[in-house]
Picture (cartoon, rainbow, N blue to C red):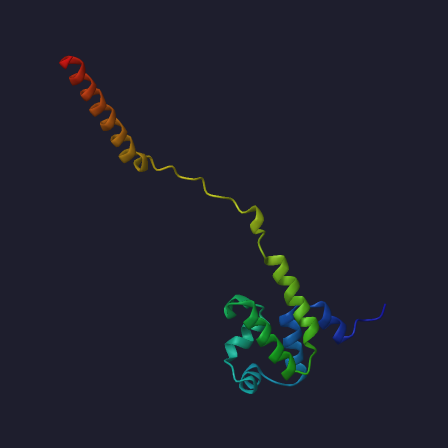
Length: 134
């Protein structure tokens, strides 16, 4: 059985592993690659470790992956597809999000109820006075 080539191995692995393998093939350290990209080395380390939450929004992750791939002369499209697949897998289904039970505030009805009771009492008092006076 033939052994898979290095490029086939890279295509099967994750984004970070592909970027790390490309950097190592180029003979660069993380510090050298970071200097060429004009970013901090910890950002490249986060990309290679696939800690994408470090960058915030997915648009920033895509941009950093694209620039890193360009530096390493790697095609960006397969890396973008892997990242998009990862985003689709991680996106929550918001159509079935549980809803909190609605809280009914009884104090909201207190003022109108008091107004109605006072109006009824006044109407009864007026009726009583008019009935006595007849």
